[in-house]
Length: 249
Image (cartoon, rainbow, N blue to C red):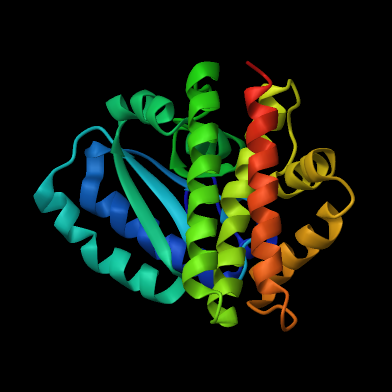
């Protein structure tokens, strides 16, 4: 496929590998010498892709030309329909600014990415500590507010609450991984980071909460009557993580 090569044996399902190969080929043809890198990131790069996961890629360009971009439109559409591929198009000169503006996202991206073609634009990328603290705090506060609103608005529709619980997993896990990194820890997967910190910030109930979080994430279901309580437990967990973050100063 590319200089780096993505195969099913590397943890990418065959249909995803096929869609990525088609997208990479079309993108290389369309952008030509304007193209610098194509990078897979998130759960697909980690080899932890689920059936409901998006396949996320960043296309790094030296210049963005509308005519050339139009040539990759159909390949992007087909890849999205086939495997939920979502592509971000970024100029080389924007990478460092984006890492500061979206520090928590790019901190996670730095840990979990795989180059499909070209050089690695994130190899030496490191958002500043101040930007990372600020952004993780924003992510956790925003999640807290959204979860409370969902509890009020959707409490009578348990299946909707299950979806909200499932959607809370990525921001909680990546925030936990960034928090451990800020504490001087490295090379911890987001899921393992949340498991470690949850016990520290909310105690023994964390195990059951995280089990239900994974169940909602992986199956889209929860036992009757527990979605609302789980959502409130996640609010407490987000607040606990935020308090731990603020204690770092």
